[in-house]
Image (cartoon, rainbow, N blue to C red; front, side, top):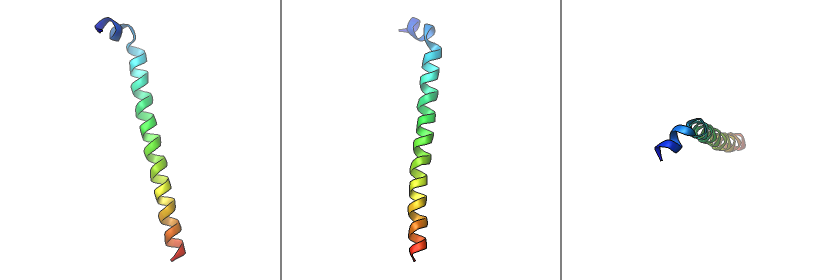
Length: 45
């Protein structure tokens, strides 16, 4: 197991970075959707 991690460490780091960026974009997308819904609700009042 240790040899696999040491030989492929760049791929593991790349995978972790991609997961983190994916989470950030997912969070921003959901926040944007919520803000648009709130803005629409405020304009209707």
